[in-house]
Length: 287
Image (cartoon, rainbow, N blue to C red; front, side, top):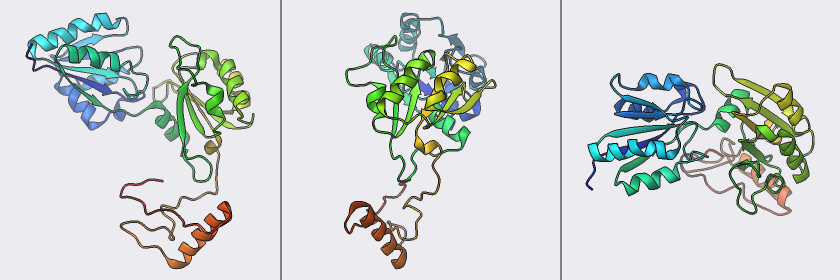
């Protein structure tokens, strides 16, 4: 079957319609059919749709209910904007839809979106990768839920790294989350953030600690649409990256000799020997 139809999988961001990318807004505006989930995506994003576009709420449809729309798009050469909350790459059930679309000979393309974990970091005004404190971010969910976790992917095992962690889809079992974080090695006073409906009108963002996470969730009666951020970077101060240090050099900037020597001394003190202050950064590096 020859097809000129196309399905765009569009990241709508965490909630606020003005966090759509320019590309996402353009794709929605050009679509013949707009599929969105009212349970996860704010209705304001539909303001970008054409007045004559077919709008379909998928919140009560299994994938079999969406398949006829893809089939019609393939047969009639239509453009579909399938709107997903956050970024489609994370817990978006996108891969199975990509497989269906390709079986129908539909062209597909993905528009990335702002994830809720970066939105929450912005709301609380924190960097998640603070130099000398945390240089990794673990994105995961609590095991034992509706979707099985692969072997080896347990919260307590990830917690042993002691770095920043974002926990999705886990608020209904906050007691187990807290227990696993503590069992993995996070001290009870490790900073944490509980965020409900981030960037929505009824947003609730509360700071707490790993030791008070369960109590915080239960106090506010949260069980869905809630994200946890955990890790020492959420309260760290007094560190500095090399990127904007006068002793750091890269393609567009030379290092100041005295500051460069300082960086090398600091690196040597950390490792027990003379070390360089870091390799040249490539253009666009941010850490």
